Image 1 (cartoon, rainbow, N blue to C red):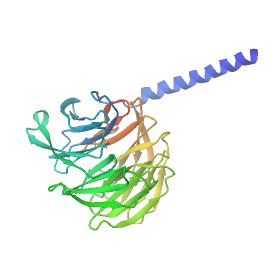
Image 2 (tube, rainbow, N blue to C red; image 1 turned 45 degrees about the vertical axis):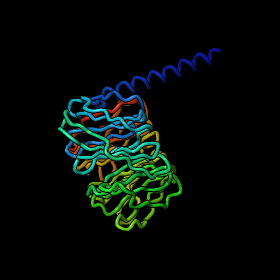
Image 3 (cartoon, helix red, strand yellow; image 1 turned 90 degrees about the vertical axis):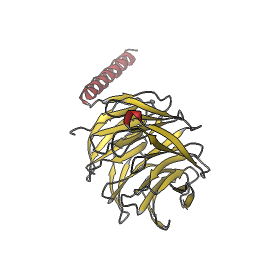
Image 4 (tube, helix red, strand yellow; image 1 turned 180 degrees about the vertical axis):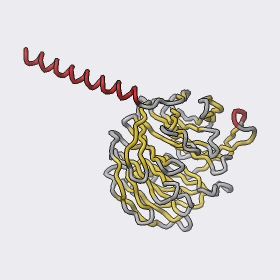
Length: 331
């Protein structure tokens, strides 16, 4: 019995040490500038408008919300989806917003009047085709087409003007989780639960190469602004950097203790942000992958991250139903 008591005292001492260290670390960590509440489900996607004046958030509560990122005020609530909204992207000119949902529907929202807090957004089109959930959407850099990654293992491409399906790209063995266009618009990358990343030629839809290395599902993708690197986040808790021209894996970034659900490069390419199931956002120096800091504010898995166009702000969304806006340290 005396041995048991001593072991219990030792255990509580260890707990006390951990708690003191955690409190100290939390005191030194950056805090979010704004906590955006309003959603009643996981915030699955966030996106800044090209001019940085708006921040959009999509949620598993079936809604899309628009915010003023400078003061955290909600500007608009976009209703129309009947299922979880998983994905968001603004068109390059900022006049359209695409959202993808769990029922396979993609909606296009168009700015019809006003600007800023007086802006009026209306759903003008419903794009259909996918037989499974739409997990990610991305506008082509020229704004002429829209890509949707779907759980049916296909990449769907729509013409924005006609709203017709112009191509479906098949090759992955399991559902798609992510999609990203290269900055020049010549390539599109897809990530899948089959643990691979595929690069496709946009012009003809032909597969260029397959990037293999992750041990579990690929959850997120992002091209660097110069198009030379592709970052992929995975359920294997790592972020990997790939040389786009050669397909070679150039770095493995370790530090997260949960699924890496989101990755994003800063506009200048000097930073990479990653969000994960360990409730944290991590910043990495590019291109060497040196870990810089962890942003801790979410109370549940971080599902999405996005930099503002000027690189000063970083938005994140998570399973705690909140979107957070952080000032990027040193900017």
